[in-house]
Image (cartoon, rainbow, N blue to C red; front, side, top):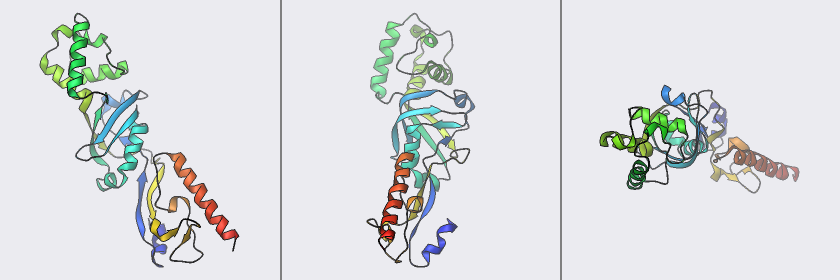
Length: 237
């Protein structure tokens, strides 16, 4: 942030530079023991906010990553920075189902597999290891059959499938955030030339601008395009 200070003297406004596109550090050993496991589609949201994202999730040895997490970190970059990267997330592992539809599905499964052990039946499009993890989290007995599933355990399992809660304690462990949110206020730049509106012959490009998006590719393109526009204008002088 100190590298931007000299730009304030001629009147530029700096939006505080903060990390964007990062993963979530979750100190939950039983979850991180599933490292390498991916879920093709899940909904993840920040508790007590309207921020949520749907997409693939990857479980890592430090927490959660994947497109759904990265998108959420970009949309919530400023808020999560204000929270010092300590917050609660809730995951719906079955984003196409709400509680009512999930209970109907589980009722049908229990009738179809009434004599089978719950651990041996992998319903929905969930990885088997994740299904077993959620059953263990619900403290379902390994020998329990669908016919003998207690209502209390069923309620816990339903909640875990659509409202699984985790405490996030920090962002990407290895400081490998992809881009920076913040920088030069975009209202102070002529986007036809990338020249400062306040200081003649001063040009901006790439990460120094308050531009960030949902993929690293977009941010590369931003750097190349703004650099090209600045170079074109400079070459004409």
